[in-house]
Image (tube, rainbow, N blue to C red; front, side, top):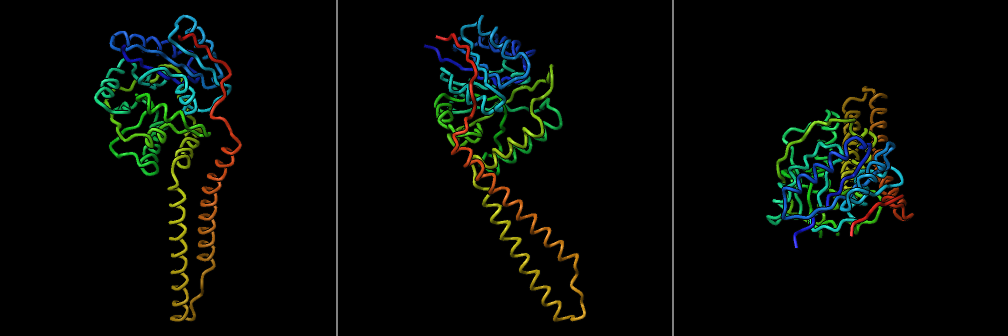
Length: 311
């Protein structure tokens, strides 16, 4: 029997775009006769009519499943909700706005067939705003430093993974899921393929500054203790610098007894050290807060409704 491909598409404010994305997926799979496919559409608490559109699509197409989350839990939580409803041998994730070219899915699937466990689409020219491109650069730096991502590996929201990788990621039940971290801790057989990135036709990106900051903090703290080690090293450096400066001050006083030890330099040192202490306490507090929330069994997401007529 041919392999089943499961498409997982997180949806947010996509009432005007999701039909076109579904149609493009279907058209692309019509040209790949060696595969069967299903589509899981996860509405991430959209304030518009996104789920009503998803419901109407599901009523006409039995191979499409619609999941409605009770509120906005974020893209990665929506992906996890989709992962737990897939039936396929290979899972493909893409965006709901049409910027990720579904008609090039054959490139990702072809690379998977070569033996890779995961394949990410790589864009030569991204058609995002400067703000989103900056956010992507920071996310790239963070995953490389904190999660050990290979420098040459490009990470995007358009990717394909084998089912065993998805099953392993779905085992993670704590709050604050971070799909990239889950994938990188599961396998190192990851590759890229080049695809074109389109301009957004409708609306604007759902990623605000607050959501990007939350995503970065999630990456910093969810799957790495390097921030704590960096804080320890930085604290040791500041303490050592303060000790050396104290020795320098004593020697300078002996060499030139008339020199006046400046109040400004003292206040600068206090403010700097105090700021560093607050920063380190904030990082530690972030870890402790996540432990507390995990112990309270805070859910990754809550499903309000599911429309699923698949056999």
